[in-house]
Length: 129
Image (cartoon, rainbow, N blue to C red; front, side, top):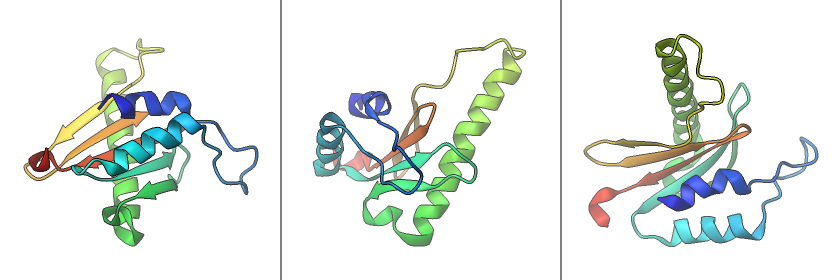
């Protein structure tokens, strides 16, 4: 989905830790479009900090403890892939960060769009397209 790739470029950081994330109208439109698609089970917008935190989410699958498990797993996947790429390149991959990942299982597909500050993950049911 091209929408998930464009989202990380549209995020505006909040001015303080206590204020909610301020999102531009283009991002709001994209998130609305994503959630209206019948094959999308939900999305998560996560912080890149440690520990990873859920900034915003949509979809029952990302509620409560299940959402925390997904958030942790997504952060681990991105870290692991980035570390593997650095290892393979001998540490010479400066500026060659992950832009988009797509992982498909028998039941679901998860698309991850990392940014310097955020991770956007979209859970999709490929059988309902």
